[in-house]
Length: 116
Image (tube, rainbow, N blue to C red; front, side, top):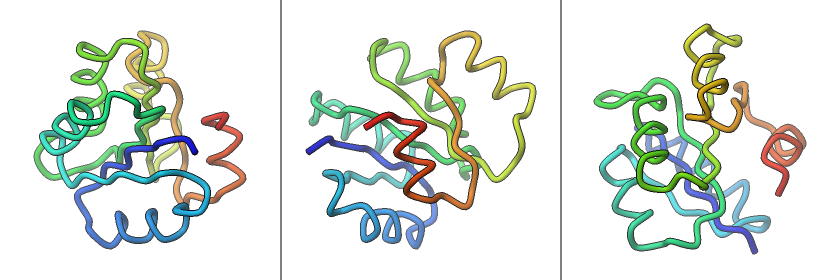
């Protein structure tokens, strides 16, 4: 089973993701960039990271850049309620994120975008 790290600063979103995808993926969750980086250190077998764009202390793009520095081959997906913003497009062109996923999240979209 593929291992997905889902990062969001809203606990309800972490719980919903875990409940909805627990039968399809091994789901790890983090409420912050720091928590996400700690989980990645402890779980080098994570297949992909999905991070919310808007978080309190560190944005999803900032987290993606941190991940890219330490784990250059790890696929990182940005979850956003917005359309394709210039900064998201630029992050994709620079290889900081693999792709973006639009909210509301649904399984078919998730599966097709992350390819797992």
